[in-house]
Length: 317
Image (cartoon, rainbow, N blue to C red; front, side):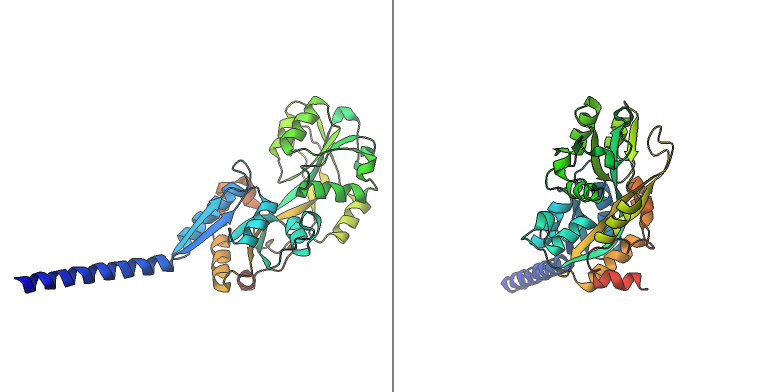
């Protein structure tokens, strides 16, 4: 009887040990992956959630989650610290980080690798019709919102103004967020605002609901000089009808929203991630209207950092 009890105990312990080992094995096989996005009200967050779902459904053992963050600049730092594995980052911010300039001066970030370009985020220069301002050259002597201090928008504004021969000494600079700029334009406290975002942009729609707006074009020699000097800019046209009473196309420039990893990511994993995303683009289109503009054909446009070898392998197929 005692012998049977001992045998039963040994059998029970053996089964328990096998279960523990199997459990550890399955856990070890799991791939935990954090995707740094942006604010919950923005574009990056819903797209990040959709990408997490795609990866979890198409890569064995994947456990991906989308995290709300402070967007591009914060996401570079999260990738660099290892707190994120994938991140949404504007290509100009990635360029600044990789080259240790602008807000990353003295803090160069090495090892950033692009998975793909996703969609354009357009530099929109907005004023009210009643100001009489017709071009960016007319902004001299005016009060202008250039984005939050140290932001990507602020860098875009400074570069565009420079292309038109204008410095901050020539204008009354206001460092404002999108919402603050929209309210200030509506209240008449500023004359124009720089906004960088996919269109139609909620802040611009908000202004146009109460006022007739004018989008100032970035065109001609100024546009060409910007494209030549900064490798992250691309040409873009804001189509007529994007906003109320906008009766003609408006030329501008855009930066690209990119999906970025680091060179620490395994090549095969980067390949699997890229393949899963671009074989399920319908899921991104369902997550946000801008998802409809993401295509395999445009995935290399505006890349400002090297592409990850795993992603490159997929796009070469």
